View 1 (tube, rainbow, N blue to C red):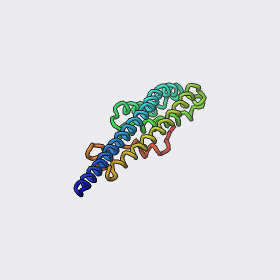
View 2: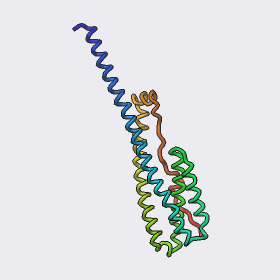
View 3: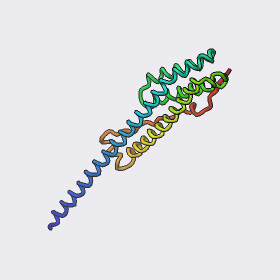
Amino acid sequence: MKLIELIGIIILFGLAIFLVWLVLAYNGFVQLKNRIENAWSQIDVQLKRRFDLVPNLMETVKGYAKHEKETFKMVTEARALITKAKGVKEQGEAENMLSGALKSIFAVSEAYPELKANKNFLMLQEELSGIESKIAYTRQFYNDEVLKYNTKTEVLPNSLIAGIFGFNKKEYFEIEETAREPVKVKF
């Protein structure tokens, strides 16, 4: 075998390895992007369930706590923001506002023993608690997938593929600092 043939084979072999790596890297980005989209749709399903449950909860509480207008206004405003939200960041901010408003409703319920004993309220509260757990789980899964994807877009040599094919960093679904603080209720 001549030296030129050997060099040609080595070059072809190197090119084949490069092409296999390119396909695997690209497919890895596509898989992660699809997992992120699936995770977001799972969050969206749970947020919709919570969104639909809130009016029932508010009606139950309104019957007992008629003078808590500020709390009800906050819930209504949060629901309105959710319908207008575009993108992960805006959706997250609106959902955090609704979570805070719901905490306020449950804090208000502490002042009304007959409300806390109401079967409908207890059922709604339990259902909402289950939904909140599912939202927390799906949010964590979504953020884990975003972490994998973002890391892959930043490390060499994958960052080159990400740049060429337009795989840009994704946003995390985060909790605002105010959502971490205890709810303040004034009577």
